[in-house]
Length: 171
Image (cartoon, rainbow, N blue to C red; front, side, top):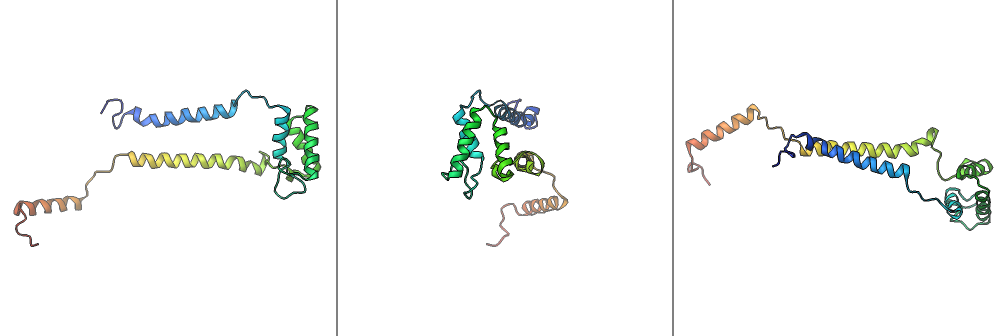
């Protein structure tokens, strides 16, 4: 085995952590910086429509529903996008008009922040558990013999020395 990957080498100990760090940094970079894509007004209308609930339909967004109320809300969204309002300003307008329940994306503050934080915590805990389990699997086993183990070996050796070919045993 090479000296770099020796069983107790620091490289072998820290390599998985370094790999995980690189993956986390890469994922966070993509999440934070994303792409340089600028959505068109039609893309913004479609996205906002997916986040506003139809006031007359059960469980449908304005984008999915063809109800007259949904068509009117889509028209208003389109108008507000054309006026240059931000996505958050448009959602705030509909929340003020119809109540906070009309927004399908929970706010990221207060108790609703748990919706955003708990999955991240669950993933972190799952990764920690996997690291612990993998370290136990790859760790060296405890090879300390107990007094009972030593006595059993000595008894077996004494029996073997007394009858090395096992001729005294009945079959």
